[in-house]
Image 1: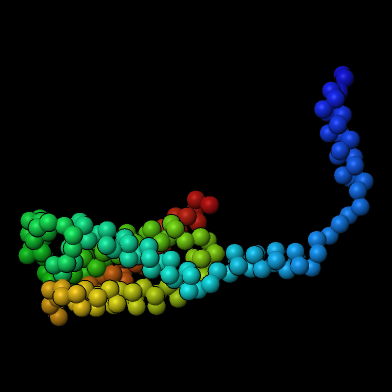
Image 2: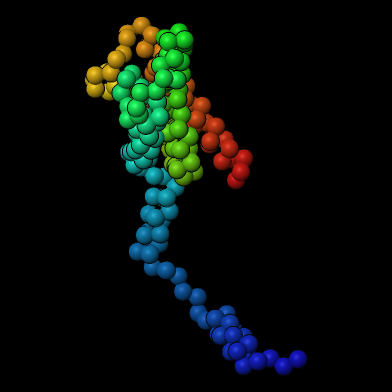
Length: 178
């Protein structure tokens, strides 16, 4: 079988490549590549937590369009939510509200963060979730939310549970899929 001119040219170029003198990149190129790899493998904690927080806040604001928290939200008056609030004990109601408020953000964070960013978060995520939950609760109170001390104090606990559950579930599903 006859080779075409293109195939002959490719074979000739490949032979020249094999016979060529080996060249190594310079020290500057090596250092630049190592910095890029290190940056990818070890992202800065502040960048990861900033990304994490932005996703959580955006998702939390989105949930306010559906379900107001402590009377603060973007939705209109919802009879169903008021009926649910009056039929449920305050401790359970605020626990579920906190869980619902952060669940979407935690799940989206598990999707948005890269594998190395998730590794950076590591076990410190529990401290982050606790601080985020308490600060969010305090933000609602500062914005004039109708928070009643006794029952509403379960809201941060629900938020903590929502963060842990949402983030862990998505991260585990990603590991199984990969």
